Image: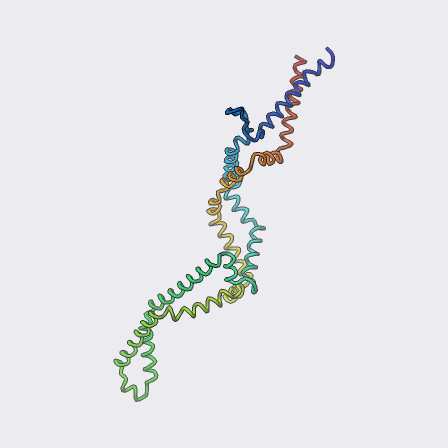
Length: 297
């Protein structure tokens, strides 16, 4: 038996192992589309991954959303010291600036002009109504009557008029005056207060936010502390709820389904090219070893 006969078995086995593994790897991705002869689709077409793309997308989405990237993981990332400090500093800078952002410019960036004007009008009406409702609860007519009575008596004390203006007369005048004033205010209060509220809101919305916070005693250090506390509390109490609504699994599934088969092939090969090549080479090696074993047997 010459050397060629000895090597023929291992070489053929190696070639067969290489070819079968190569074909198996290629069949993971190719063909990209079904191949048909007439009305009949050829078996094993399209490739395994293109054929099972929807199931693959659902499996990956579920795995990532439920196991690899849970709401607890995202919450932990959001509370990472570096990220939290960056967010809090940005928020502090925004709120503490003595020049720049006003409530008007800040809200205008978040809402359309129509929504902003609607919200502003709603706020004006709400403030107006709250004031009128508060005045009604004060029993302002009685307060005015009692205060007027006290002042009248104080002014008339020791004068000749005090002899003519007895308590009954003063009570009658002040009670009537108080009732008339209260009725007038409740009837016309909206028109009286509206210009004042409009003017004050205009001043307020056009002042820098930092000036307003400073006026109420919130300097930068205090603003930073409150921003840090609010951010931490929000992430701790509300983030999980919001993250659940993100439907991470669904988003990933949708993104994978939107990719074509060629893009998925490129993605998989970018990560596993060396491993898949090793599988092909392993087939050649196993075929060679089996060929050698046949010689020994």
